[in-house]
Amino acid sequence: MLIFNKFPNLTVIVSCFFWGSYWIPLRYIDSDSNGSLWPIFFSFLLLSLLLLKPLVKTFYVIFYERNYFFFLGCLFAATGITFYSESLLRGEIAKVVVLFYLCPIWGTIFAKILLGNKLTLKRLLSIILGIIGLEIMVGIEKGIIFPTSVVEWIALSAGLSWALGMTLFHLAKSTSGFEKTALTALIIPFVFLALCLVPDGRTLEMPNQLISVNVIYLWMILFAVVWLLPSILLTYFSVEILDPGRINILLAFEVAVGFISASLLTNEIIGPREYLGALFVVSACFVDVLIKSKIKY
Image 1 (spheres, helix red, strand yellow):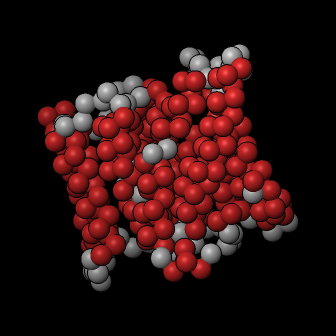
Image 2: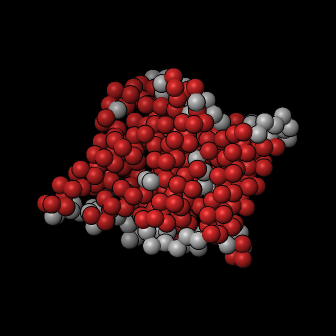
Image 3: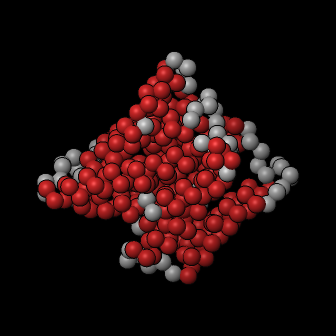
């Protein structure tokens, strides 16, 4: 995919429009299936089967080439996506998105510890702008952002897990975006199964209304092909080219997309303060991508 390799920054930004609207089919499927796990389970399983050839190759990569960092990267990325999905279903979209997108900070820290990346002035400025934006969204008078519920902890853990996964890919031997997407999609359903063990978790019962089931089948296919495939694949295409910190900062564009879509399609109250905060977060992306800095610490 030469075009993706040529424009990695744009590729990540485009994926944000899919991630930002990700909650729409996710919530529709969940509500129409009365909270059953299976429609979401089979959507991700379908995605992995659509990429059957690269999926088969991943087992060769892991067991024959002993590319264990590749497996760990997919595992943590899959956990991040699963936790993010669950928090979007249970919590307020705006707050969940904000807590998840602390991941640029985690990504920068992991890259420093595991990869030895140097912290540039522009990256530091991006993090500061992002933190200011997050504070504005939540409310400066409430102090530092800190989870106050299980859902918020899940959202925060999602960003942490995702950032770690993106970093581990840089320690792994080179693999294609298709291979990363295929294995991640295969792991996600089983992480969802694990969440069924949590009190008040998902139900394992199948939807019992025929009309509802037919609609869900259609949404499962659309969800896998239209949302999941491009969102995950486009992000992974950039992993081999961009460092983890930049990828996570660029993905903050999803904050803006999520806020706008939530304000238009839900009853969540999103006012000028939230939009101003989102503007700061998006500005952090532009600072990191557009400003050239040679000053390092």
